[in-house]
Image (tube, rainbow, N blue to C red; front, side):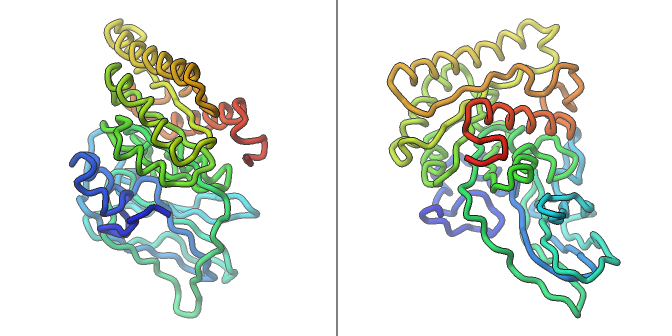
Length: 327
């Protein structure tokens, strides 16, 4: 539990105590409910959702279902299975997700919008049914900190960001601190992350940084986490190169310079004797056929599915999880 974890709004990602501590851009992005999900048990024959959006945001490269829709999953024999997406039609929305279900108690999960905030959320069930809170997981969460890709750009629906795919496949909570254009490994976010007792931390912010920023921020970030968690694994992930960098040498050089600096800082961490620090290269992160993005950078559902599989394979390689997803 975060100290000072009172939130300005229930569906914000940062505590109110961080307002003013983080840059305005980060605070604004923390209002997006990326990675947040709501679990509940119900024997209802119908599931409906009503939600009010903060901004009713639009972007020209991301589906509105991903920006501000809501996904419904249910637990089917221990695995999470997709059912439907509530499609947004304005700031205030009311959507019938499913009906005609046999009235058996099941666990459901709603994934909230990736690039918009939620002001209010209501789940509708039929009048003869009940809704109850499921058991809380006793597993430690995985904390992801990064860029627009971590936030979910540009998944077609909220459940398809890689953090949520990994959460379902490993059946563990994944905390999403992705801040579009602003994942810069800054001190306030390092302090926030260090307050979470995690299974491990995944730091994926290189694409939002310059080599100088990486040099200035990477080691202090680790020192802040290590001051609270001396042995919890910390994983650095290289930034994926843009697709156009295959033919654009300037773009390629910019991306490679950032990753080269991250590699240097990582070697310095090893030299200083930091334990349980790991490094994941970017090669193969989105496949090899250049068909995983919407704009050369941000991932489609195909890209996110590949990236989730890639990261889980790497997590197993460095042994932060075993083959069954346990640590």
